Image (cartoon, rainbow over all chains, first blue to last red; front, side, top):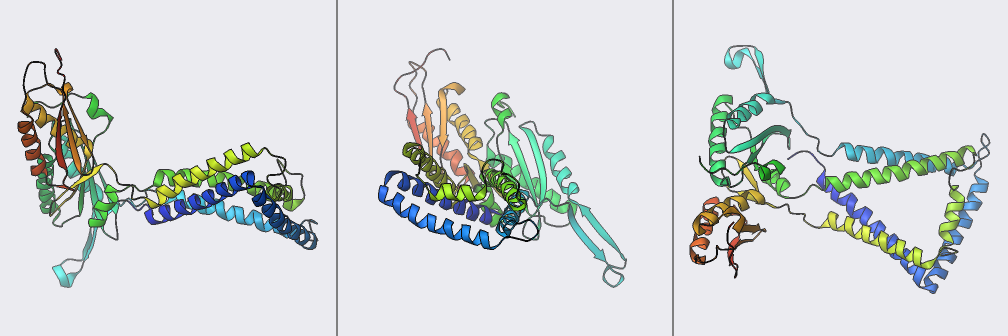
Length: 206
Length: 187
């Protein structure tokens, strides 16, 4: 529920995959089929000859080297910047403010603002769930999802706990949270396992 | 919330994306270095750009065709992996519980543990004798009975199906109970 650019991920991965697939197939063809190798050498040497001619003609006065190398260096720099921004976009989208309400005199008789931090909802849910003995871990985080702040609660039950009964209890808690906050925050409950649930003892009695 | 649930049950592909981005960054940094050296007329570090272009244009040239073919097959396979990650749906091992207020997703391991518990209760065996395997549409319950004690497949199936019914999963899987032919003693 975070802001990872999934469409972009898939598009770029498909593009890289397609390019690698084409390059690999080409290498196999050039290595295995003499006719393909002849065609490639004829075609590519013509391109390289043109490039060499252009490099001779495009020398700069200052360095006596062609400007195409400078242009290629700038191109690679842009690629590096784009790749770093692609990595930086993975998993972003954490929110910090749940509610920002500006009151005015006409509306409710008092001027001033109300600002609720996301930690209010997170800690309320967390402290309520940590009292349970059938869970060994709880995490609550807020995300800005499609211009709306949503709460993601991940709980880690012990082995053998029925997820539907656990879900009913959590939904009840969320109802209490709605009353506490006076607004309905979108909540996503994720019931999962970690390495610890396999090593701690199963719950036998509740 | 429908979008949020879809995002939770499908992979974001962020791991492979980060790997690809780092690999491309390293290659681009090397390209940047060689191009910058060529632009100021310094000697190249490994190979200058024009010689590299000539070498690529001269392929297969002097290099061994087996090595080149193997490199090509490897590149094509890596490309297929990337293409598969880009195009396949990438479902994660999770199911959705229907609820009007809260969007709920459950890892399949949690469901399997809960179903194994009810199968164990119905069959009267120990934890080690029950293995539950869950995929998107099938729940397979494998039970190894205790030697000399007959257990009923129908009872176990009813118990597991009853609990699965109560969970109201989406997609709803069907139950298969598998009693092993040989029993065990002393577990």
